Image (cartoon, rainbow, N blue to C red; front, side, top):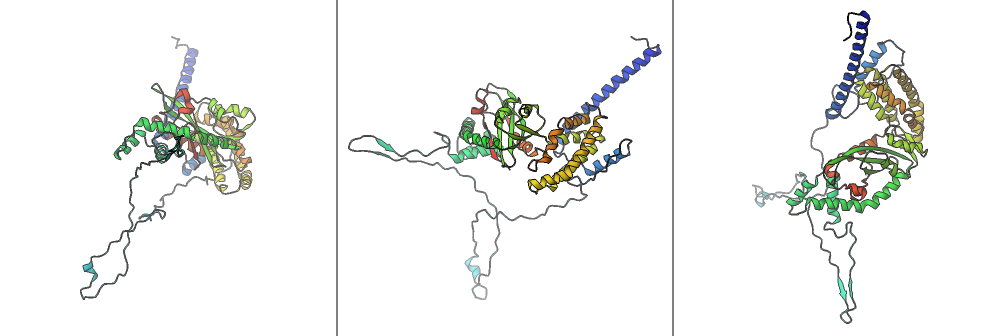
Length: 461
């Protein structure tokens, strides 16, 4: 044990303890921030909107602190303003959809009431019409296909039989309508196959989950050519957005592992395709985008770096991913307020340009977004010289610095979006499928052939 009676030793010990205390305080602050972010994601609102009043207060506090004077930021951020009293939705019964078929039911008065007490016959003067929405359960029909056979009664040279009609799945008990119903129930309505099994059982239809699962796999195989054609059309575009999300995959021999679903969105052609891989490695997107030439908008995932280095794919950054880090840092550090406000102003420009042509949108961005980006860069450089590198705000500044060139490129092309939120939303929708039911048919031995949806395809919303 050091001799604390020695003044120099005591000072050194105090300095060491102070360093340890500072380190512990930083780690504690970092852990508390991670806990706050996790709780917000689990239990809070999904929106990343910042209350303009809270942001304005933080900006005023920053303005009162010593340091370089910054230009005032107009707080018309493009975010939904906080109102004291929200307008109430109109109440009352809405009219029933006009496209639904109508079935008229007439109810007449008894014959005894058609004669007045004075003896005169009453005349019909009108009617009271009320509408009621009714539900008729879906019905099952057994379609018997009879194919005629002909033979020669004289020479018996052979039998001629009418050809069988084409089927989506050969030698399957299910018709195309039933197969479509199973697929829509599972992937659109997120209805587990065991529940669908019970629903069918109530109708007296005995179909096991194993059979339903086999149908799902068979439909995936039948749709594979369509999926491949859509992949070729999507890859032929010169501007794509991409994102990925994790899914839990049931292993063929039991247990589970984390697979990935990748979304590739053509915003201009209004098409989107999905791909599934067993891991988060770069091989998946590298193979899917092997023939792609153009601009790729994505997050900062390092797996795309090989595509960018080839020189055939240009990286377009996602400002929403950058903003998310500053919004999370703003919860514990008011110094992020100016950056959040500047990014909100960029989104305000995007809202103003939403209905413009690509050329007009580019002109508006050059006029308004480029100066805002210059202010954002200046604020980024100022924060980089003051914040702790391992703090939440330091992490946000580092992300903004590393992605800066890619984040600015949207201003030079009016067709490009400021972020890849549409692809991010599409990947979130796809990951909403219950993992155990989504991936039951996935097999590591033949991932593409046996996956429930090897390349899930859909029209973009």
